[in-house]
Image (cartoon, rainbow, N blue to C red; front, side):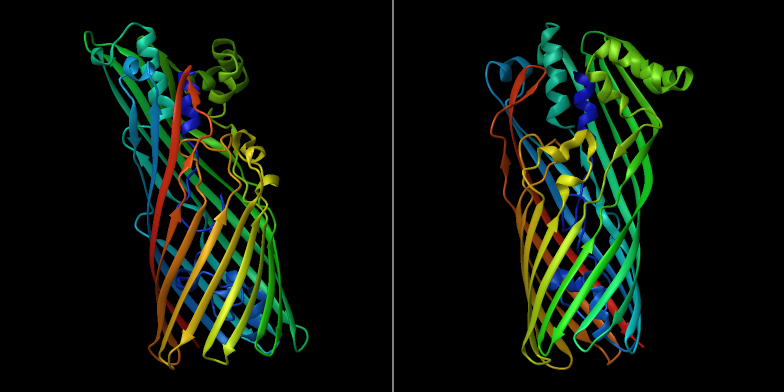
Length: 461
């Protein structure tokens, strides 16, 4: 049970705005307005490719950088008499997520009369690293419970626990846009999604009376892979009204492990599972793991070298309505996102535990004060359809409200600088029932904070 708890802890993380596996903020215009589905500016290369048919004639380029700050904390409440027995009652496990040094995105577009081509490159999924300096409850609690079952009080051993995971999905997409009537345009596109990440962790419990490792678990796994997704979008414009729809198809990501270290041991007897698999092969190793650990063996086997883990990016439907309340002066957008998470494969089929796919409602307002200054603000509501069965210590989500604001400064008629900030206000998620770690009931509460600062430069030729 100890090993499976540790393995389950090393799951993906995400630090930017959007669905469970998909980011939606690339351009700083999103940070300062959020609802960008009706944009005709350069950020439309992602948010509304069909809208580029009404954009700038000629070339546009944009480079953006964002810096997110996020904390992902788990409060573990162990009830009596277990709390005294393992030396842990209410404990806050602090997880710090970061994206060093920043999150970049590049946009380019060229329009000529009724057609346009565009591209976007950025971090389209996840986008950071999370570190728990004290590990997480799903392996700290079982280890402490194991020590108690061996007759050891908390004062009779020391424990070193650490866990870190990193996950980036880089995306490069290209679109072709065509305006085929006075009011209608459409675009088709394709994006390559390139996954890279790792899971690293250890938990070592040592006897205070003798130089022996009572428990020794070490995991170090790198993962890389890629997938593609087609994209379709349409744009309808009538006077000051804009109505758009965009759909991204599911991107299948079946990621193979490159396992550097996978070891597990109890009472000084440590097995190098990775080395064993290289000698006898994965199938024989899997059979041995099942024989030794039962059902737990399948969980351990998921991290053997060459085994594959699913991290699909779900289909995404985006619908937006934009309206210019004052022509070329004051505009607003109302937008809806639906992520088809239930039909996208996740590790251990966790998608089946969701009550529905992710729903997002976004609203944004933008005001051109004059020819030089523009200000904007927006808000977003995200509902993931969460349940106890979906949540895992470092792969948990919390429903949220997000707000953002910022400004744009037209240095010249060709050069614009954008600056924005948004934050997400998360609702803490408390399990309906305690989760059992080696027979020890633990009530967990998951909490998150997220702040993003960004700046970008747009240039028109």
